[in-house]
Picture 1 (cartoon, one colour):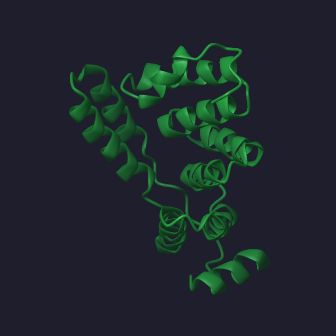
Picture 2 (picture 1 turned 180 degrees about the vertical axis):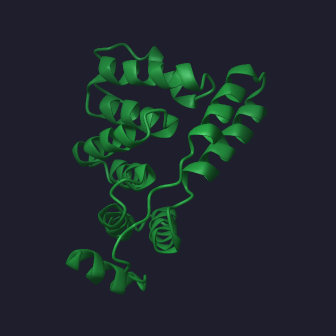
Length: 180
């Protein structure tokens, strides 16, 4: 908690003692994933994907939302160190909120720190097993680590939930590919 307090003060975020439980998004995601199975165009898929992101990035409370938004804003301008710092604070404050781990993994992926990103993706998927973005991110991370076949397997699992994922292009890679 001391680390969180220092980071939060640095970011100008209020510190709370305990993070509330993450919102239960099961019903919303069931509906969106069911829709994804019946659509017919990329445009429709993008719309539903955007709706999924709206659900995933709804943090448990205002303090968590501030940390999430701060990290995403910093990542958007490629302040990846600042993004990771904000996501570290979010994960420390809300250890049961899957999106904190997913976003920190993405920032580390962009830093090409794949070995650090992978455990965060695993944790995000423990907390939210049908988090399609975390699944596809894990697949891409494994591919970047040279674990092509394993990454493709994860992408195949994600495609069962969302057959419109652009990551499906990586299924064409031969399993022994080393240059990505």
